[in-house]
Image 1 (cartoon, protein in one colour):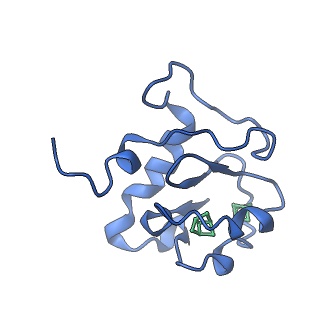
Image 2 (cartoon, rainbow, N blue to C red):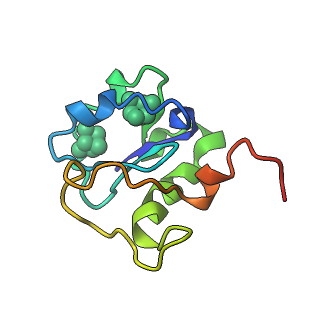
Image 3 (cartoon, helix red, strand yellow):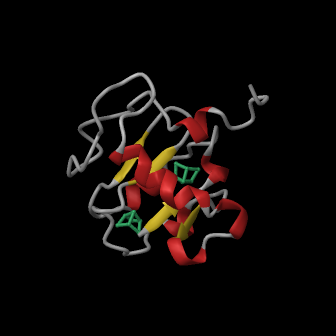
Length: 113
Ligand code: F3S
Ligand code: F3S
């Protein structure tokens, strides 16, 4: 699968969304996330991101390797403040912006508790 890493946070350019043939790039609040079970590895999203936030999972820079699991977590686990996982809805556009992020993205740039 492809993964959206740290550079997307607070940029959310959304150019990637237009390119994805299977509509598997979902919008949170401060970042977007790729649904790993829906991504068909076409790679169309990767070159259009202006801040180079998107990588094939095996090519993630080491400092952002945590984002592979974190993109998956966005769908597999209930987000903070909810009790139901997003799962695999089969299309991002009809959901729109979900208004929530993973704990990793929410905490990005915040002072440690
Ligand atoms: Fe984010 Fe880049 Fe897409 S900034 S929304 S991954 S085009
Ligand atoms: Fe879509 Fe990018 Fe995967 S365009 S299918 S999220 S590689």
